[in-house]
Length: 219
Image: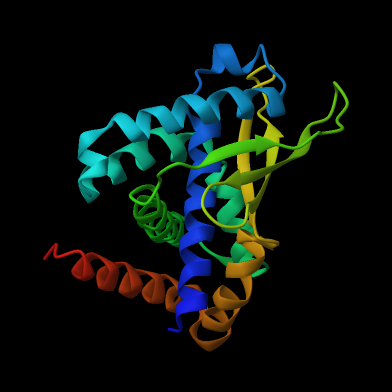
């Protein structure tokens, strides 16, 4: 992998992790009191401070980082919608068991990606861009810039108002440097499904997760 592309991946995953973690840190009660963009602005500063003060994360403790991602980020993501969107038409043909396995493997992949990014957080700040949204909107796009050393990194994320949760919001897609996460994975998933169906996709994700696990020295 060439160095410019490697740097792009690092900046992308750091930005995505910051944005997702910022959205995930607030209790529902507080989320109901704030507009999505206001919530992101306040939480970004709070979350960055938590990361900087956590010695385990600073020391590269992957278990600690993954625990933060799994407990803080993932419960605040509509992961069923995200997985279904990335899977495309094949999702409708999948059995409930296949859907469960697919979500499990996809979640493991994203958790480890975010964990790797959070270990690299340093002096970044998040600037929330002006947003136009109506009070009754059920879906919004919040646009931000992650600023640190080098050029700012564009980070946008799609959020939906969660039924039964007042004005609580959940993430269902992320856009880093102009690339939406779901759009990025959809062609990869489609290729596997076209080759061997949903089971082939599940197997490919499982194998990728095993490789990532081994790379971190966890046998």
